[in-house]
Length: 491
Image 1 (cartoon, rainbow, N blue to C red):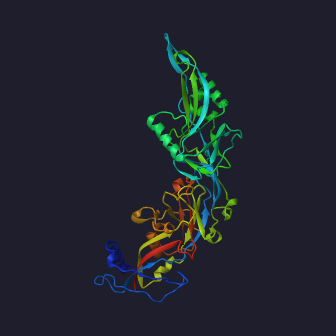
Image 2 (image 1 turned 45 degrees about the vertical axis):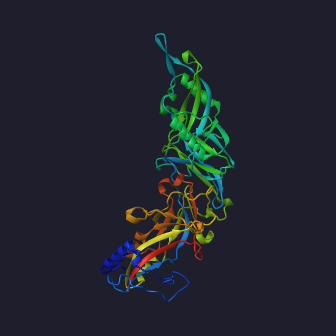
Image 3 (image 1 turned 60 degrees about the vertical axis):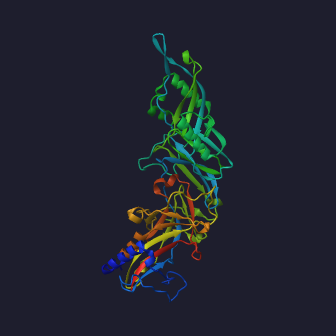
């Protein structure tokens, strides 16, 4: 227990430690307790710390040999609606098997689709239109996961039920779906060029022009387009009012081909995804003039990604995680733990003997504590399976694997990871998270048997993230999950 009369000493050492590290020498203790390692030593070197300031019996120790248990858990529900981006595609992952995602969306009316008027003599006349074509257009953003060199396929299908959120839900989840027509409204094979297509979208926005061969686009079945034009020429309310349009056209689902090799991310800003109807005016001075009307697909609480997984080709039976309360211990998965955004997989860690730090010396306290974890070597690369670009977040959890609270980090902010790059040896690069407040809280308030932490991608975008990480935790390896604690001891 940290006694009140020791706190001034601890704060003094901490401040000196941060301001002038050259004034301090660290005593590194290897395996202080039986719970730390199998190797022990009875000798360590002791140096005086600020001889004129504090008692010579005060020591600063670095301890990094805690036992850390790890496992993989999976959230029962991962929200994917109401996001600013969606996932689409399918790919094979060496560790997760086949991952695929389809996108369900309500298609907007895009404003009243009314006939143009021209002045003929003293009268205003409506100008009829003739149907030309119906085209699906989409521009992915620059993020992707998988192999972009192979040919991909996409098809669009009409949803046959109204897309609405059930009363007992706040939105749609990765497992949500709606019935749709088996026969597609259109489809195409294409080569994904997400970076190029992202730039093409920016060009259309900046120049306010259409790039006819930009993005991913294909013709849709004529029947739908002909019916829309018929209603426009009849001045039907269905093409004038959004509520009636949504009753007529419930929505669509974009389906990925079974042999696709890449998953794409789509931002749903205006113009990134739409159905475009091309038509030609038939009469008066507008005769022969071509135009188009866009039916946009934008960010909405009703639009969501459906994510599916097939672990049959994966080396570890991740199907064992049948519900959120189930944990798959790293001992059963080759000393590995997993994080995956769209699948809602998180790494759970427990530090069972952390509270025993209170037994070191007569009194003491933590100057700093950091949690370090390593990506498995050869589980990522710069092209197909990139490391996440967003920081990981730590949450406290319980025996039910419920997400309780985000761990506080330095300066009161959330505990988020930083990626330390070892440029001399890339294999030794790792993620690090400041967990000083958590360790101090355990030492001050005690530790329950079920206390644990979850390593997760940010929850606010978890369901529409394709990011993944495979974490090593072989206790006999240098690349295991480590808790490094700088501890002040007064004997």
